[in-house]
Image 1 (spheres, rainbow, N blue to C red):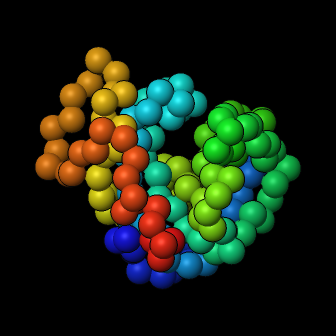
Image 2 (image 1 turned 120 degrees about the vertical axis):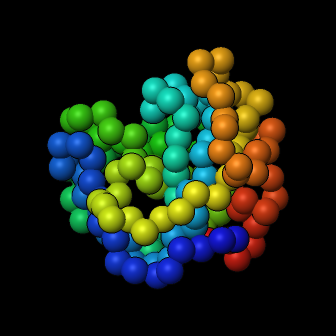
Length: 144
């Protein structure tokens, strides 16, 4: 997996009721166009990811989890509604919404997934790779 250099990053929801630190390498940003991501964010999602042990929640006052499917749950702020995390039941990583990480992030983009689920109000015009759904290389062993 394409990883960004290891650096301490911080992030938070819009109101600050959820704050976190990332203390390890981050995956390059993946754009997900699945219906669940679009419904929880209002658009497609831009997410990075890290190993679970590299994400440290420093203020969890507003953090709530919603089981969005049998395979994953989504973390959000119950105060301001910010979408923050996506965590699968299987796997040692957590996806983090890139827009909630404090700038400068130093992140770069990697690819688009679930493009077959993309809505009809936008088109993808960048040169990033596009995948109809998920793929093995996205979350393979050693990716995060």
